[in-house]
Every structure is written in structure tokens, then in C-alpha cells.
Length: 513
Image 1 (spheres, rainbow, N blue to C red):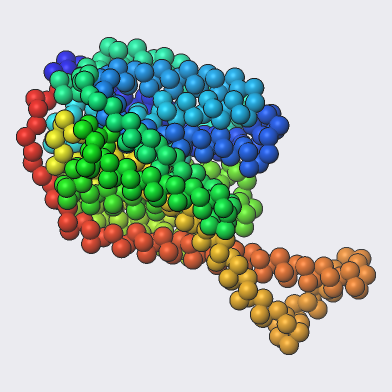
Image 2: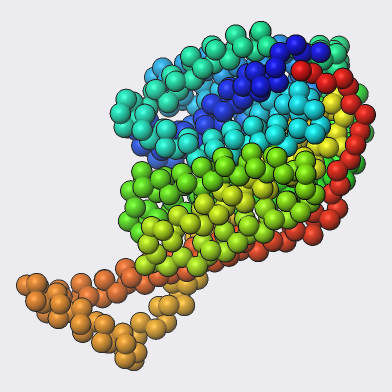
């Protein structure tokens, strides 16, 4: 039994978790500076992001097994130390290759922090306060991706890109001391003698590593038209299928206990979480692209549009945490799903003349919806999981959450490119000399440019170029509408799954206070 206050424990586990989540997105806005400083190309520089995501994705589902192998507290301290040291190395990187290697180490250190902190919170808080515990966890999960780009941009502009990594060092040192003092292992999470599942390790690392690279690089390389992407996809599929078979039928101490999926609420909730973060990341990736490419917003202003949504989430999370113990969680979850879908629907109605209030309001609505989505969903999903199985379940749950975000980003960027081409081909059919409106537009544009001093032939060419540029903007706008609309429909489709979930009461070990 832990003698320390549950709030001290919550602060202890959430401090390193928050900086780990921030580090998944903090590098994105600094890529140009990193590329210039290390003399790297654009494609090469993105590996600093991909390498972190790959190693992160591999470690997350292993967390429960590694916690039992080394002892959870020992493994948590090791992860924080590795994350902190690798942050120092990332900031001191002398080439792009060294930075990628250090980012891999940073992802390995950071991968365990999310599932371990979630499992400790669910163990530390009594069942009736699980909503509050997940509100604390949700603050980091939801707010980290929002504050990351803003923080990274400010640090890079005012100091240098090296400091986006150096700021982790004092926080990591404090976290190690706090973990040493305040965290204790229950008997079922202390070090155990286990036979290492080498086949499971290799297959999981290969399958998830290749999958993450495919999702991150697929659209850039035109998916299966690229032999590289096709090969990685096949390797990933074969490895993951083999992993499932090995873990289910042959491993004595499986890295991931797949029997957890026999719990209907857990398997259903994990699916809903996957789609929920598919919707969230798709939306918060599309929105800045729309604002910067079509509306002329700066990077800072585009990031600023995301900020109020993060604040709305911070407000809605504790409210949902309180209500989840008093109201049917299914009702709250259904409300959250509908609100998220509605927010994305509002985004599907954006136009090229949208003002600041019009684009910021749907993001606020989405922020409110995510608060009412995350808390009841996690409560329902984890309510039937025993404490000794919580680390394993939390690892799976967090993996599917992260993969949902990766799939969402890959999906909408692909839809954006494909639908822009489609709408361009449709709209260009109207740009013919036989269309009256087109002839009038060309004539008016030519006259306007002639009044500015251009010759007749130059003015006509300029008028045609202006019309074509406007066609590209219109087709791009329509593609954004399509992408937002599809994400909205996908989100609504998970609503019937809520009926399959139920809040279970299971025997639990004595509470830690």
C-alpha cells in the first residue's frame, strides 16, 4: 500500500508523460531549422519524426511485459533516464544520422511512459474516482499535441532548435527523484522470472516498425506505386499475423496477452478509441494545412487556432470526470461521439471566405467533445480489467490510440491529394471558350492587367494564369470539404458500438492511498 497522496503520485507519473507526448509533435515545426543546421534534405529531415514514432509504437504494447520482467518501478526509472539522456544527445547531435539514432533511443525511453502512468493512475485512484484519474491523464494526452508545436515554434524562434530537447533534461531529473521517492510496486508488478519471448519481440518490432513507416511515408511515395512501401506493407502484414499466432498459441510468457480482447468492453472500447483519435488527429492536421495553404495564415496563427480547442478540452475533462460517476457513462460517451462528429461536420463547410471566428469555433466544439469522449470511454473500457492485467491492457489501449492518430493522418492526406485532382478535372471542364462566364472573366482580367501597363498578349496570359490559380484553390477547398466530411461519417459509424460496452465490477486488490 502506497502511503503517499494519490495526487502526488499523479503528478509524479504525469510530469514525464507530458513531456514525452509533447516531444511527439514538438519537432515538426523545427524541421526547417534542423534541416538547415545539419545540411539535410526535406525528405531526410522527416526521419527525425518518423524514427521517434516507430520506436515509440514498438515499445508501447511491450510495456506490461517489460514491467513484469524488470519490475515496474525499475523500468519506469530506466525509461525516464533513457529519455532524458537521449534528449541531451538529440540536442547535441552533430549530423542528421546521429539525430535519428538518438531520436530512436528517445522513443524507446518514452514509449513506456504513457501506459505505465495510466495503469498507475487507475490503480492509485479508487474505482469510483477513475473518471477523475483519467481526466488527469487526459490533460496530457489531449493537450500535449496542441502545446507541442506552439512551444517548439517559440523555442526555435527565440533560442534554437537544440533547446526543444534540452528543456527535457531538468524535468527528467526531477521526475527520476520523484519516482524514486513516491512510486512503489504492488506485488503483482514486482520483478518476475520469465522466459524471454524472442520471436514475439522480433515479430512485434518488425511489424509495428514497418507499419509506422508505411503510414508516415505512404502518401509521400504514392503508396503501393512505390516498391519500398509495398515491400514494407507485406513485411508488416506477415510479421503482425505471425506475431498474433505466436503470442496466442506458442509463447509461454507472451509479450502482449491477447486474451485481454476476450473482454467485450475492452475490445469494443479500444476500437472506439482508435476511431476517436483517427478523427482528432485527422482534424488537427487538416485544419492548419487549410489555414496556411488556402487562407494565408502564418504558422503561428494556424497554431493559435488550435489553442482554444486545447483549453476547451482542459475545461471539459474534469467536468466529464465528475459526471462519469453520476451519469450513465454510455450516455456521456454517445454525447462525446456526436459532438466530435458535429465539429468535423462544421469543418466540412469551410469556404475560402471563412473568417477567424468561423474556423476557430469548430475546434472549440471538438475540444469539448474530446473531453466527454475520452473519460467515459476509458472508464468503460478499463472497468472490467483486473489490476494485475492493467499494464498489459493499458499498453494495448495506448498503442491503438496512437495508431488511430497515425491512420487518420495518412487517410486524410491521401484523400486531400486524390480529391483535389478529381475536383480539378471536374472544374476544368468549364474553362472553355464556349463558356460565357469564362470568356467574360478572361476579358475582365486582361483589361485589368492592361490598365497596369502590361501588353495585350502578356495581360491575357496573366488573366489565364489568375483564373487557373483560382481553379486550383477551389478544387483544393472542395477536397478539404470532402476529407472533413468523410472523417465525420466514420466517427458517427462507431456510435452503435457503445451499446456493446458495459461497466463491470471486478475484484480488486487493496487500494493505494
